[in-house]
Image (cartoon, rainbow, N blue to C red; front, side):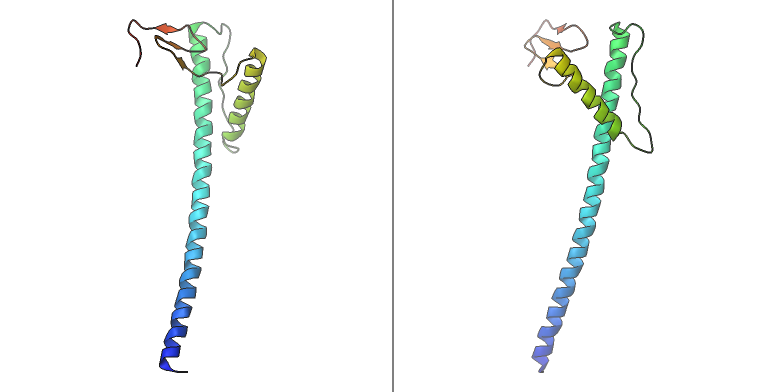
Length: 129
């Protein structure tokens, strides 16, 4: 084999090594991305639980709930996903029970008021927008 043939073979090996390293790095990046996506889902679940808790506290403080209020928590070992899923199912049942469409607990912004599902509308003397 000539010197030129050795250089070509050497370059092919280098290219093969670089391709393999690239695949390994891609695998590592995909794994880290999956971990971050899982963390993000847990943060979203925590946020849903905290929002539900805040809504329940506001209902209680406004007098809509007279005797008691629900404060949701989750098992540290299992994480917040199970509790958030149960909250979502509870909201869906509430929506079906009331015959409403959409998500319970959202604010509706109209021309001159903000309608909150757990309080009376807040009227403004000037229009929003």
